[in-house]
Each structure stands twice: as C-alpha cells, then as structure tokens.
Image 1 (tube, rainbow, N blue to C red):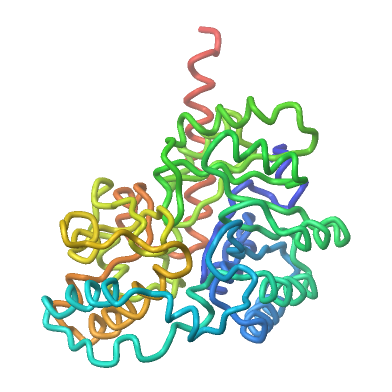
Image 2: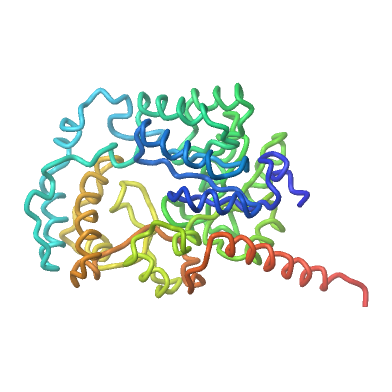
Length: 379
C-alpha cells in the first residue's frame, strides 16, 4: 500500500498489532503487518530473551517494542524500595480487594505478602533506561511509549538509531504536545480502546488530531480504539489516519498466551460488556466487566483508586490469585476473572490464527474501499 506508515516502518500493510505474545508479533509481521511486543513488566533480562527469540524467528521482518513510562506516577525517580512503595498502600484498599475475593469463596491468606515484581509493569526513570538499552540493541523498527511524552532518552535513541518513536494519545492537546516533543508516530486512541484510554470516541478523535497536527512534517497517525475489522480500518484512514494500531483482536488468536478462561469470556462478551475504570491501575483503562469491576465501580464502600502505580499493587495480587484459581475450575474465580479489552470485543467471536486475522483485515479493507468507490463511480 502507498500509506506513508508503510514506508516509515518497512511494512506491506498498515496494520500494527500490539501484543504481549512473541508468537503473535512474529505471525503478524510475517503476514505483512507489524507486531509490537508489549514489554510492560519485563526486566531487562526477560526482554533480552524475548527479543532474541523474535530475532531468530521473524525472518528479518520489522517489529517494535512498547513500554509504559508514565509522565506522572508515584516513585517515578525510583528512590523508594519495593517494600517502601508497598507501605504507601492503605490497608483499606487491600481489605476491600480481599473482601471481594472472600465473597467469592477465595482464600486471601498472604495475599499481599510480597509486592508485585516490576512495580506493576510501569517503569521509573532508571529501569526505563535499562530496558531501552536492551531494546535498541536489537533491530527494532519502532519504539512506543504509553501514558505521556516519551522520556528524552527514548527520543534521543530513536533519532540516533533511525527508529521512529510512537506515543499513545487520547486528546487533541496531548497529540500536539507529543508532536512538539519530536514524536514520529501518534497512536490516536479513542475511548473504545482496551487498556488505558481517554473519553473521546475514535470517530471524533482521529479527524480532530489529524487536523491539529497537519502542520507538523513527517508525523504519522495510527488510529486505535475498538478497531477489529478491515472496514473500520478503511473508515479510520478516510478520517485522516495512515494506518491502525490494534490490540484486543489479537487476544483471542490461537497463538495468544491469553488464559483460556479470559479467551472464553472475550469470545462470549458483547460490545457493551466492558467498563472504563481507574480501579486496576490508577488511570482509566477499559476491561471486560465482572463482579470485580462492579465492586469497585458500584459499591458505596469502595475506596477511591490510588495513583499509579499504587493501585496496581492492590489489584494485581488479587487478580493474579483469581486467574490461577479460575484456571483450576474455581467457580467464584471464574466469575471474577477480567482482562483489558476494547469495545470491539463484540465482533471477536471466533479464535483464529494471527496470520488469518491479518488476511481478513486485508480482504475486508479492500471490500470497504470498493464499496466507497461505488458511491462516486459514474453510472
């Protein structure tokens, strides 16, 4: 395709797949799109192992890495130890979370005995630099930061290595700020998106941002938010995007390492069965609705979510136990199980290979393009 993003990333089709599964990264890139590995929560050593595996299997096709280095969060300078950070979490939050599990007949003994490794997946300044050094030691073709302007070190390394730097945005003013900072690719994510998202719909946000950054040379736009089909991709590109960034649609692929209970829930969920809440990370993120999310959103006794990353220190130990028990068949845990997913989940109705998802996107995109062309062709 002739989209600028294809030339910028060295890909055939402007479909970018965010995933935590290295097998999906490889499958998407080899099919003509681009896989981007979500490295949140990885240590430098773990990331080295994952990227080395990708290098050995991707046959020279381009791929990228995505990190979460928030602009603002507690302990961003990493002066506090993991235990000192854990001590900042009020007992009321832990008790409330444990109470939800207890109501579903889950043992909560020692639930918070050990702080989650990796600060809940969010990088402070020191660990971010170490992770970036590992990423740029590999032939990545894109590096992405979520939740704020990329750190200066990321931007510097991107320029030095000729690797485009991307950033997630959920509002027009954020997009302009990112472009001014030197970001190359804006991932314009509407509220329909799974994971962290803003309030504005994709239908409104994409053309709004496209107009706002039109004066910035060489800034590309990837539309995101609820996009799981080629016809949605065509619509986004008609509104000013150069391609799309997708995440949820890969969760139910055959290669994905998504837990079976979560795959089962996602394949059965409707588009209205998600909720946007701060209760998991401290910032708004969209996830599949369950009694866990209902308790945080609908209970008068629910404490206000803590700032990032403290809220993750409440939610992740609890949900980790839920997931483990759900896989063993515990009914209460199966009910509570939840995961990040966008509103496009209602169109995710079967588990197919990641390669087939790419091919379906291509076919559906072309059909949508032909349909649009039919409206303007002369009779």
